[in-house]
Length: 402
Figure 1: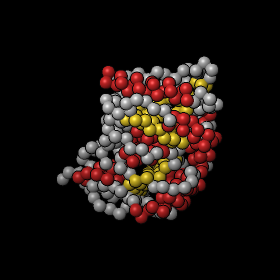
Figure 2: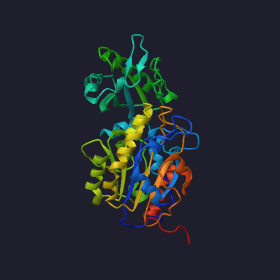
Figure 3: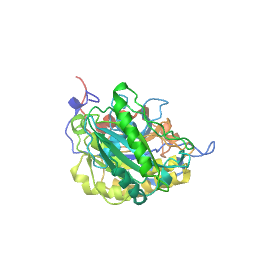
Figure 4: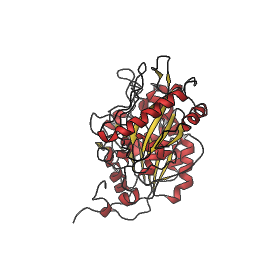
């Protein structure tokens, strides 16, 4: 269990905690001396919270380590990502309502575009819409491999989840995305002898998938990543004494929340205002709300500096609806940095804003941005300390020791 000392410190409280995560929030200047995406965005409400509250920076994994989204979120949820490893496939599968049992292998799939030589020309098949991707999904669902059960489910746009269920399957397999265009998808290889059978069966599936998709204009190939099985994570309510809820548009983040025991709040829409409205509707039913904003990360990966700043502004514009709920603790942060300059996740510290009017010590910063956070009163700390910090400010932890 993460933080074995915490359960005996927990004490009852009716306080509410909100963890607002802008995926890939951290950034870098496009030009030397210029602003980051967060600094360039017009964020009057976040700046007000920064001037009233306290700032800092989180280290998602360890200094210099670039995190994936799964481990970065686990860290924010209070689980050491180096101890609790969760594959992307399990997160995607759980996020779309599939059950992953111990012994199953789940993988996250991407449709990609292959040229006439079988080389990847677009790693995300032009970010096709979910509607465009559905015919390709249906073709994958018809593939059958002897001795195993296969389940394929659409996730969103170019993403899908696949589960292989059968005897003697082990998930120690390499990803097949070469992470660049102009290269062929990698062959699936076993990382341990026990996974040889699974590698053979998945390679057979990939071969048949390519044949089934050959007539598709964009989604004519697949890559797989994050092969994994059920990790058996400790339950959130038992660990932190919280009835927790997740409000997220993208399935993967609903998946990681479900794995730790959060309820997923259903809602319509995909904008920050829609998510905040869902929180308001469920406000009386939960102690803790995890709210996830995806498009900051998407814009960063696309190298769209202005687009990322505009997404941040849309979150800020919707914040009054969240503030009207009067949470005891509001944390605004990211799971990792995704600078548009780099077009990828990075190892840089992540901006962190703590607003807890009854208990925080305001620092001297007046704006929410990377440079201000670097001088904030919270300093730089491991992301997995987020939960103990939130619980303390919410009055949910008693004294340790005599």
